[in-house]
Length: 479
Figure 1 (cartoon, rainbow, N blue to C red):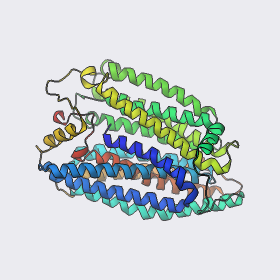
Figure 2 (figure 1 turned 120 degrees about the horizontal axis):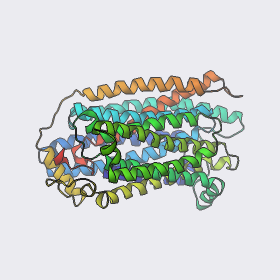
Figure 3 (figure 1 turned 180 degrees about the horizontal axis):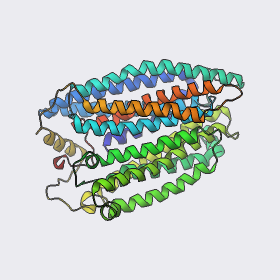
Figure 4 (figure 1 turned 90 degrees about the vertical axis):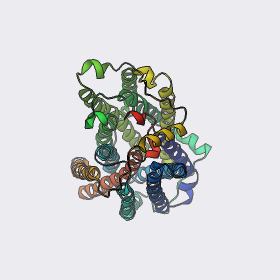
């Protein structure tokens, strides 16, 4: 995986811990929302600057390369922090809303992850990796931030009203217990099994996506859209599974407790399958005649991986919301603790992916070693060779991005379908809220989540188009 992605994971984990320790007890929900949106806006501004510097780096400017690399790292930290805090904020505020809203949040996260790889694949094939169009695309996303904020004020007001009806203090100025050793211990005593399963399923999931899938899709034989973007499109299949499972399970009023630990066991089976495939390539080379067919099958298999992860995600958060063993004052802390544990699992799996890619799953270990392959001894060496390779092609300064336009259309179509179908099917009337109001809240949350999370994932995938930050998985001289 790209090193900046690893930095983002570290930032997510640290941000959730700092937020739980200092944020939940000292700052209101809306104040924290303002903070993360400012961080997100800063991330896109920094990305635009790094992209602009890449033009000069392509021309051979070592100073621009170094400066752009530093700016990219700062952007990774700010984006990871806003992502980590933003997720726990939204999940926590869904506590007093109808159950369908947690599913709406899950659908939005899944759709965002489904669309972004498609946008990336089309952009990569139809639009150059540098150019003014990329800069303006990333900066234009900041227009959505004030829309997101004011719309969420509406959601928060409903959360306040419903909580007050239940006799809880849920105003936008309410405080939760901070994260301490005592509160963390109490969280683990009351819901530790769910927290540990949450971390385990995501460790296995990211080991598959960041290592085994990555190794399985190297050196495609063809040059078509599917072959050239096998990893990104398989990842889209994974996110389709995430969208379906998070949406359906999250909209259940009280998901069965078995949906917490059964997906962990099934994800372990998935992990064993992908570990074998990344080493032997039996499915790709023996089951199918062409790489294209094999990669399409990979996409279906990754949908199963997403189904397991998404089921565990929504079931755990629904359990944290509904279980009477957790006091209300600790529910937001519990969400932060569980998110921190899952981030730790993802971080460990990502570190494992890097180690495996340099040892038993290195390209020369699992594929015929090409004579023109250059061994990269460190990240800075990778940056140098990447820049040398990209320098052979002139930078494009075009303003038009057909791939981004196509991806945006796909995003809009999928968003409309998921937005209206799922809430209408699953939203229910409660003693405190009508079915119509539940549907409206769910639709709003789907769109807000999709916009916010898609901004984050667009950052990740579009960042790979900046020559300064190519993934470690490929030798750019062979592309």
